[in-house]
Image 1 (cartoon, helix red, strand yellow):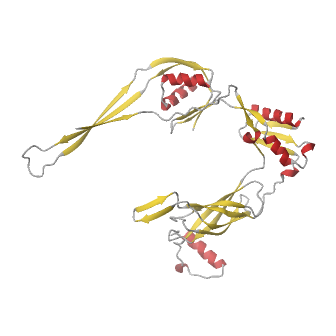
Image 2 (cartoon, one colour):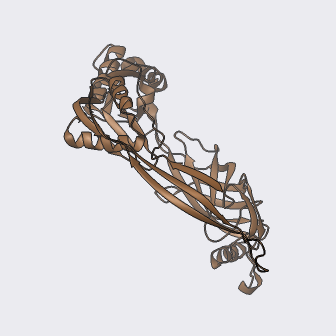
Image 3 (cartoon, helix red, strand yellow):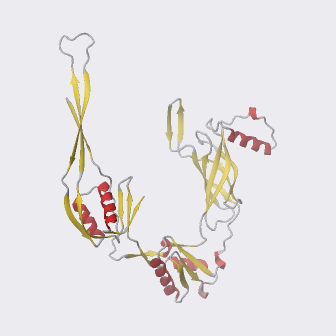
Length: 369
């Protein structure tokens, strides 16, 4: 008799993140917490045609119509019935235009199959204009596609590596039009915080004024700080930005607990506090035992008798006796130590934190993602 015991543990991986600093604020570089307003990336998109595929192209009419239009613009009149598009595919091209990009610069293009192409391996993108949200052409894309994988086989048997219907063209986009943003002529330099906060914005304003020896910075709202360019930095905006980005500023962190119930991950911020509270906690264990019942034919059994193996399953559920435990902590380490003494699993911890928030004992924002 063969006996198999399977134990199911109702727990997930628990991640607790905290800072080593004893203060409620941490010093960060301005470059890491803020950016210059207007200095940003811009997205480009375009529709194109990939040719040179080895029979893995589109079978629908999108690629067929594109091929006919292309040949017509080249002065060739071809009947629709004479065109086979298995070696061509309709695609969408996307690219990211970096800030201060100049005409002639090269950037990467991402090419994605639009219809029913099976693979873009070995294909070449024909010259395609890329447009911005305003409908204007800012770049041109063309070149061989690299998918970093392959797909082979048919008839229900095949091998695939990575995603063969999406590929890249390294440096396949040439910028043809620049974004009109001249930072050298601004009189007021607006800085935008990555995470708006009243305390952080005020700290940033004070640090900049102290560094520039004057009242050049103001904070009109919790998400931005406006810096008037001092006479020393007229026509030297790049040097001014470099200087400001190297400054250290105290960043205030809101008390927050992040819960990912799908993975059982719990992140507890440094400033989280817990009022004294009593928790009754119990754990549940499920044990599944699977026995194999073997039935053999007796001696002198009739011809055709066979040995039969019949599985037999048994389920046992046990719940430990719950106990009432008082916990509470001012610092994160005290909270973690108190919860660890309970021996809670991540899934149980999620339920405990939600109950603590409902009871008003958890002094933090509870966010479930």
